[in-house]
Image (cartoon, rainbow, N blue to C red; front, side):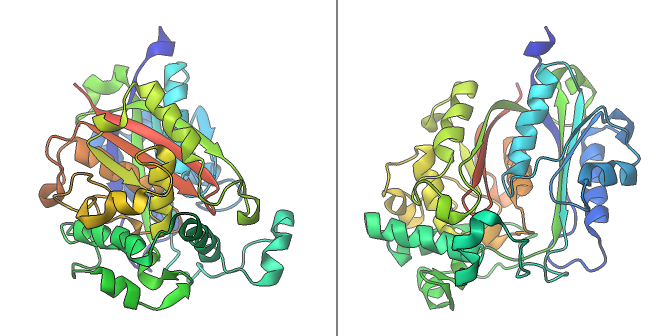
Length: 381
């Protein structure tokens, strides 16, 4: 039955990252798409579904498909921020299982650093009337509010937040494409400039350009592809608010819904997972996500990741490319989580490879802790 067809990631690629004045948003996506399809041994004529978020113009999938010369029979420009691409994988998998498509191309591109767009004012939102007039910096102010609340509720310390950044840097030091291979200490994080209390500069993600692409195919096409497919075993998504003043609980994210949903669908438990890729826009994002996903109890994430537990050689391999904190963060980071997880499960990560990785949890967060999407991936047997 078509409704039982499995789906898998069969190709991944990045465009240039860092600062890319020679590339546009569209050319970043085109380069990544070309390389991801080539890795899979497929061409653009094999693609029958196009997914993107952000991108260019009022209808990004229309513009992208025209630019690439693709006429899809399925299109999805769902934009829920940084978690969009995990949602796209879930949507593509559902469409494959329903027999609607065979090969989906998911892309993202951003010139955020070159265009110096990070600090530009967002369009006014009616529900932001309790925030913008009072000068809350976005998005860092929203995450700072959550961090302060977590500290108040549970006694979380700046040192525990800093541990997240230190672990990410240790992974980045093993990644040839990371911008810095210098060691980082908790003291370094705490000595960096305060951006929005309690978040220091090194508690905050990088600001970069970059693009990425992921190709998802039906199992019927697995014999045709040049890679070992990485199966999509489970998916869950939700969004709880748009503005931080409307977040139901500043210490609990939608991961509390999307995570269990994905794990139930996949039939896996926390202890089954070999590698975890979690959106790290800020250090507090990771602590809140770990608790909401159920890896530890509320208030325990600081202790959970302390002592290098999430760093190379630790018992909980997390954000193994260096993450948004030490690898790249071009506005919406979620597609890079998927790329890294696929490479880990295919055993292609060199010095940062997690030995024997067979199951991965990938979790995106979008907006101001607003949306979440969780994907469980497994190495095809």
